Image (cartoon, rainbow, N blue to C red):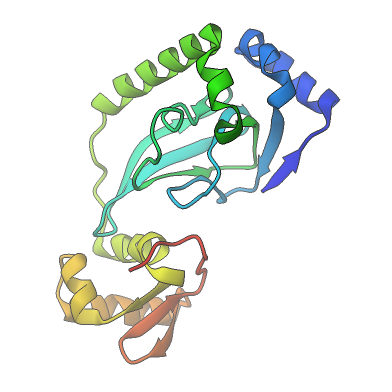
Length: 215
């Protein structure tokens, strides 16, 4: 993740946006955020809340259940809006946004400028349009089925402290499988180099990230 504050670069991307009339009013608050492919753009654990408009690239938005099940909620390209819900809610539960390719967003801090945003009628109209479109899209979604192996990976990545799963009996209950099934999957992951065994009944994701939740 990289923050870009060059006014000329910001202006060029604002002019390309379908929301340029609104963004021009907010220009003193704006900066750019650059993300690598696979990097989390939003997650429940990020401390600062940002309003962002996709300038270039694409992203995927998904929900992670307590059992590791992953549900695709939406995808977005240029002019897709992030942070509209955060303007009114303190958090968005287990919803994550990930860069599907190198991504550039026009951004501003919700925490620092919330009052000014709520007083801007054009901005609120833009937010209403964005949230209406998202509600329409979500009502048409079906949950994509995921295998137990996929759920174990998601569970370790998003629900376990530092990507560490320990206590097979307990974790198999959360994953709705038997301890034997879970052990078999972890053994296979270990052979594939996806996890590392760090103790009896304890495994860490090889790609473990500090942005995970406590198990």
